[in-house]
Amino acid sequence: MAIILEFGLKGNYYAMDINLTREIVEALPLTPIPRTPGYIAGMTNIRGEITTIVAIDELIGAGGRDTGADSEKFIIFVPDAARGENIGMMVDEVFSVLEVQEKQIERSENGGTTGRKSFIKGIIRISNAPDGVEGASVSQRLVLYLDIEKLITHLFELASR
Image (cartoon, rainbow, N blue to C red; front, side, top):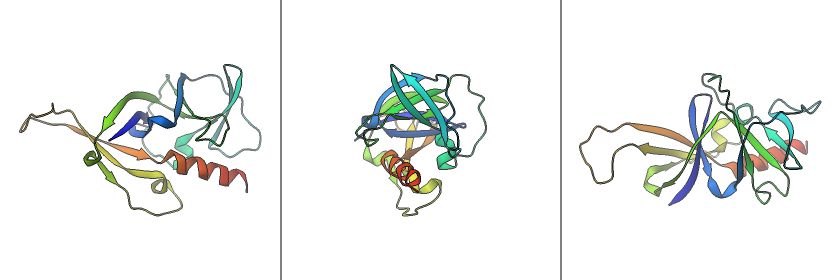
């Protein structure tokens, strides 16, 4: 079983391991950092700590429609996951924390090193069917399960170039 945080980005559903999340905050004003790549949205002050915010859609190449979300959120990572740094990512919305069974996760065997797929652990199938009810009309959404640890490692590799 995995416990995930589900969030929205560019009209799509994504998830990450909840244990990598320190907190979720409403979007705050960002100060641009000169001469940084487009995936660095800027930095902000969260309770006295300077935190770098990543535009995750830029980094993973997330396509999709612009939702025009006015209610952006920042997901701040635990310092252990971010090599002791204060790092967070900007998302359109945060939906919920869910427990998912391993059978709901179709693991990705993609060993690619570039592009969006290299940060995807798998695809989670989330159904609205009540437990134990068979034959009912079921709608299902697919959630891309991101490998945040791999993504953070990639960020640090890019920064050291």
